[in-house]
Length: 247
Image (cartoon, rainbow, N blue to C red):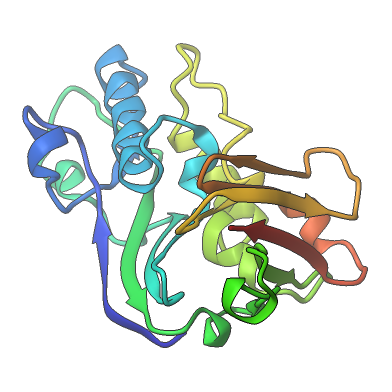
């Protein structure tokens, strides 16, 4: 992916001051259905989303954010659902009371940088930049363009990077990371992937030709956002093309 200085971090149970210090461990393990655990899981998701997009949104658990610079290098932050195989420390350190842990899941957040947007490839997701002219060449300020190509089909690999490696892994995360009092699964987790691109200028348009339930392309000031349902990504079809223009 040609990202430099990349590092992966895990966010875990939120402690006092975590919003400032951001302890680099996150893993939510579930067993008992206590209200304390439910509040902790909600806080974990909120902390992960604050690091990626600055707000609490379940779609941020499966997301990609690119922060572009003027030369179209930039930074990237990716988050995805994970199902750790090894027990969390709290599991090993808890005894008595008939405790029975029933699963574990978390949100893995990775941060890095890249030198050329045109050369970035995220498991098949590619980016192409197109200059539409400038004052120097045309006498008129024209917006620049980004063409994002997102492959679709049963064999595509990129959804697993964000939404869990399998349907069972995603279902397990939905159950473990539930914040419902009755422990019912949070079925919104991992069903869509959010891609956000922060542009070094004013976004003029953010559009896609395909129309489908749950699929959307939006813009807000200097930000373009795409919401891509995982099931749509796995359906056969031509790659989804997302066009962004700015000036």
